[in-house]
Image (tube, rainbow, N blue to C red):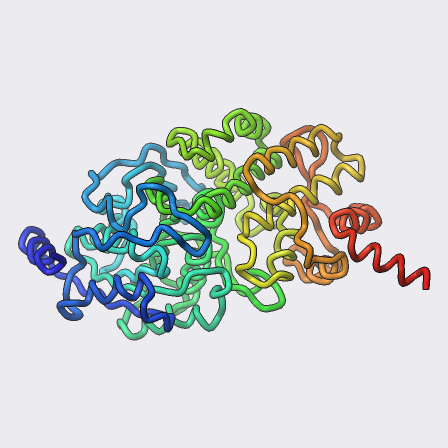
Length: 457
């Protein structure tokens, strides 16, 4: 039982820690709330159970979860050392990206990056039943760190200032000071929100990333971009704020639904297109192994993606030029996410369409040949990612939303476009505006026909 497990744990480890969980949703029967109630069954000072909670529903917000993904079913897995460590070189603020299976159980790796005696784990109601107990146990393994917990609702639609306040509320309630460390346990939304909260709580506290999705592992957890959405634009409120480390436990991908897993592959494809031809060609040969979740293929894809991003961030931390190339397809993609309403499409799904649109515009301007455009669309299609614009989007909506893109400077829209051989790109405002509208019309034919009808009248 949970109570017996707790007694055993206390007797063998000789420490206690407090776990308080704030549930930021009113869903009284949600898995996270049930889990938190189990954690607090014996009172606010009760430790987390080492036992396995009830089997989860196999259906998540975005579909069926991978086979074998049970809540805390790997709580007893042996502690492992990182298979690979990638360094983000930023001088005094440099930090490692640890990659490998079983790392979440390695308390030594986590704790050496926590300088104080308190930590606040921020997660969501989907991830909490799977990995929260293991994370808290690892953070508490030295007996020197008091661990607090806040559980947020899951989804891009909750990436708001209002939900962000739940993190500050918990930090203040727990009397956390400037030496505390915020720990992001989850995907890109949790990482972005936790990082922004860390950058602003008492004008800056320490911050760790533990990504649990492909998207966050290969992209959002690395580089220090943090923030929340505004109704008028994605990630419009935020800051550059680097973590002290990124810990990528590839075993956590076992709980990721197929739709979310595939969504993250759009960012993997992006790296090959903008700067790593050999990596793109490797993906063309091995995409079936990645989709089948072959451990070696996934690990290689994550490592190569992190290496590419770390190199770019090291050279251009605050997106003065080179780092902007990491946004291939994002200007179109963010417009889709905002236009449809946050959470309707996953970020990677929108970026996939955006990459195809950027490749189409590049080809239309004569910057790449048709073979590259076809290879881009084909690989994304093999990833089971969308390559066409949702019917709700129009040329007018695209132009309106792209005008407030963060990469717009002095009223000039900047785009990341492919140019030359595979693996080369440009971040530029010097593109053919007529060609842009032709591309938008190509992907949004409905409005073009409406406009032609109006002109005839």
